[in-house]
Length: 394
Image (tube, rainbow, N blue to C red):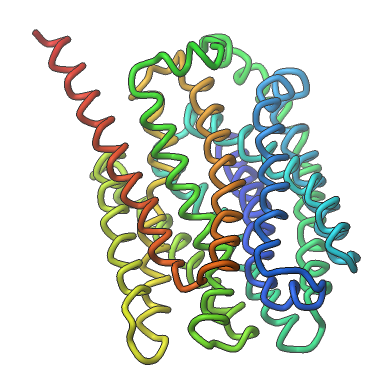
């Protein structure tokens, strides 16, 4: 029962990853056909992330009322319906309207399952869980690239992924009795956690630092994934159809990295994994930044950047109970997810305006700024926690 439920949670995270990389891979073609500026991709992602913030905040209440299974299935179904809506859209306004259920669904899955896995499963499962998100995020650009290169258009690319999402919804729907049999255990665990207000959460030592670090990481990941294809096509001169496929290399890096990290998680621990990840991201972005002839080094840098991103999100979530206490972890993880969505809401959009008004060539520099912020905040948090430990031992 325990293992079967975990397998279903993995499937839910594949469904969460499927829509996340579609817009970035298709946008070099979409914005021309829709006759809007290239920066308007950021507005769509802002609407999606805004919906995710709202559903993430409400997820704790909804999960307690309806159960994690119902929230998960409903959320996945909402993203499937939204993807089908995208596939039939012929105007930018319609994209923005369908972005609302898209965001509500994504936020519901993310918030409901991250807390559950952090509290109930071993560290390696948190890494592999997000590896399965990467499986979904990697598959969909290939589907979109195939649709574009074969002349089916971006609409059919969304339709293909929407159909796949509907199949996953049906699989998860059949699992509802299994979730119900696990509800009693879930409620028992939830009763041990304290419900805190936002001010109380922010007053816990170190929370502001981890929120800033998580904001920086999610800003980096979302901007890197959304604009990789446009950067390659518009600045590096790669054909749009090929760029759509190559953009998936970033998500392949994340996926492979999280799979491998699961085997070494217990040996290294959260702190070292975050440090190594930041170092690898820095190396990858320097490769993207180098003004060399040809695109192989830049493409390799995008893959390496994805590898560096791999352990950071799972490690931050998994470290929350040990850093701040199990009784506070559920409330803090909820706020962390909200901070993550704020980063994905505004920072890709901000880079869109930079690309429009200055140069899309600033892509690697923009990402390096967030890498530096993330490094600074995590090290400040480590120092603060170490000082707390020293005080307790004296």
